[in-house]
Length: 442
Figure (spheres, rainbow, N blue to C red):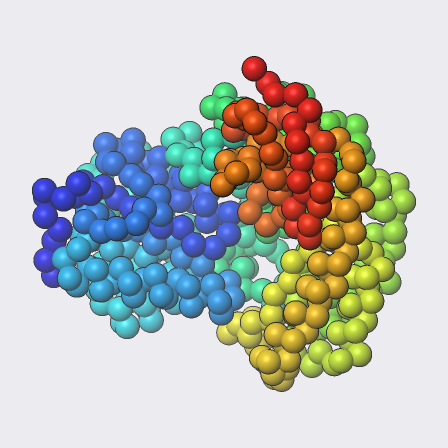
């Protein structure tokens, strides 16, 4: 293999490519910090070639994510063969699951390392390096919001999920470390800390012997949390209602709860090993809606789980129509080797999965439009994320970046990206609100 010319402008640059979820983003950012501290120039998801090295942080959760990761690896492997990039390293979830296969089938890759090997990845490019840590983290998100990983892995045994196979058992970070990181991010200008874990409500069980999410939130607020703290992802079993009370008490904690429910059919939930049934799900949602109607609920559904009947799918549709989630996403069931559901027959045809997915999202589009239309004429607080075409784009506290609604703001004067402001809602679409500023900060 040839190497890119030293004269190329990227010849001393490492390009870190991140695929998959926000947990991968945090890993990439910590790795980039270590590389930069070691004296290297580091870029993220940069186009082009000529790089001294490319590190691909892969996703291996479901089939579509695996296909995207493989496509990226093959593209860079070709560039490696042609001498358009230097060293090629593959890390992350796909690498954790299929290390042997990747090494055998794509020999152009120089190294394949798993999810807990950030230190080893850094060492491939540095002669000496300290510990890869959040303290050197380089944000790849806009500077006013950042993901904060509060734990790693998961103790749940959901039949469809490969995360425990990839990332292992649940491992909580200490409250002190999380608070220190959030305070550091605030010092850097972060206005919104998005707490992320595979099971946020299980936080603390392994380290402290009991659930400590409420205490973590209280400590964050007491020690100077940023303007917004947002929660991803909550598990419904034994959900700690104190969290909702803290949302009610403290404006810094967004009135937003991301709780993936996956389905409502008792039979499917039992097969999924979710630990609760449809009746328990409805009771929990009824309590939340009654006591905390201001909380925006986001959920995720799986379509086409093995054996899903037309009746069970229509039960799910009626459930969504009844509970009218403010935000809802869905994906087709992916038959993942190593999971307990892999022993089942993946008997719902892909075309039918697609039809059911489209039908569910059509229902949700109607619900979303009704939610948004009801906001016309109201005044909302938004965080301005960016400028795009003729609009300034912001979000309300009911919206997480990338996945939820946006507020398209028309303003004759420039707005400050990363600032909060009040807007008047003038119109609505399925996934957007249109607004004008009440006043523009100087």
